[in-house]
Image (cartoon, rainbow, N blue to C red; front, side, top):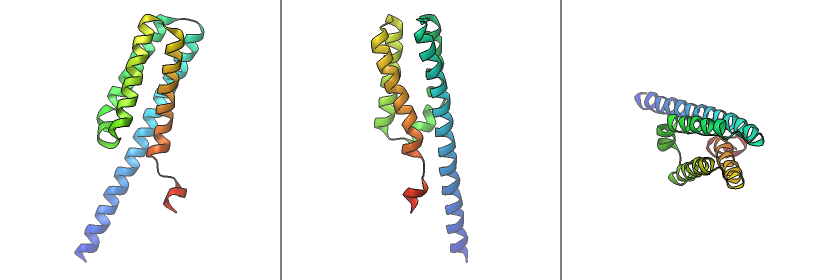
Length: 126
């Protein structure tokens, strides 16, 4: 009977951890994509001062979630996101519009795919 309780407890803990992970990744992805959308709007206006502030905000959102990402995501995914974010910042500083646009698109794609990579779909479970 004790084994059954321990197994049930482990299953509940793992399920809770997985649910928390999915929620945190989805929240990060949504926040980051909202900011990326605003950056793209400002890019159309060539408002580089606002873009710089939004890039810093994007960095804050990433680093706020960095510890959780470090525990749950593969290192290569984290590295790709951080490199892409750093390149976005540099391109924004020198106002290299074409390079910045491409790197922002890359960052957005990486973040957009996180919930799909890290989430659990019913099709995967069956």
